[in-house]
Image (tube, rainbow over the protein chains, first blue to last red):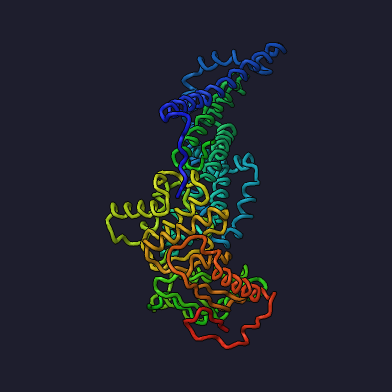
Length: 278
Length: 278
């Protein structure tokens, strides 16, 4: 018979209350710790600039930023939204294509051998060099170009993670269902796909930041661009250094935002993979 | 009693880079309905190949594989499998894991009854109270118990066990042997047990088949007189130690470390306690 441990010392209610209190402490710690780190970072930055007496065209200090935001707030909202939606669309495209490629390479040894060198080579090309080519290729299609670069820069880790997840599936997992006459697609939906989700979300965390880089590359480089990249570019043209730094911080905030959206999705769909510390 | 599994002169080879590797060569095996046969043999002799053939996951190069008198064409839902690796799906609860085969096999009973059956099986192996736990919260022995329930939930005619207790510690293993007897008493099935533990083979099975070294053929068949649940003390009787001595010797013959002197004597008539096969 299975051994079920019985608490000897503490009554159940007390143990429950204690575990709830511990849970609350953990939540507040996971929120407070990063906030504290950010405050410390901002203070250090301010001190560094003040101590060296740098003018804002060498390095803007955090105290320069609120005026910049106040002045251009409408622009930040409009441009920030443009950057965000194009990044998200590029990312969604990267997920669709990356998962499809990963499936093809994960299930077929031949396709894996055939496609890997091609993909690695493609990924090795610095995307900054691709930006002007794409910009010339589809002149004027600014939204399309931006999404394309965001997609191209971020699909690779997704494709690789899915293909590795699928190709390393232990044969017993397949056999359990195959012995009952299950089809390949049933095995994929019931076992292979869910089992690959933790790797997929790991890749997504990388892909999110990459997609932002892609979007901004295009926004900065292409003339009459849109989005935060273009705002950064206009700050540069007008020697408005606090604006440039304000854009950088806004990009960081958007990046963090999207990252935590991925984390939330991971909790929902692959929360089982996280082991509770015991 | 009628034969549930009949294997006649089965040969099988794997294609490797160094040419074909003959794994099975003239394998003979008959398992009566309700019987429980243990297959032992040197490691790498093709025992797992045998399970995949019986499950219909592979086809033999030559020879006959009959289930219920009909040739095995492919996977069929009347087979249940459990491996050394319990391969439980981490994202499902134990109950959901046990009910997995019912999502593949066409339903014979309403869902409520299926769930009742799954719960009943879990209580039979001593896992009541763990239905809603995740596999990661269970010990190795408990996972193996759950895996056993999953193999039985769709009421298979044939249960294939491929070294299911091989990775467990000695005490947990003995515990599971007792569980196995309890299950067999309540759930009629025809069993094939692949194992490398001779004590396990004579404790659980009513017939032990020794395979020769690669390429494997049936080298020796031992009938175990005792049937039904028994105590572990049974393993320390003179009868048991005699059987173990015989089997130990046969394994040494199979490994090529002892001369096969008893092959010179004519095989005793079928049905006697021990019969040599060549």
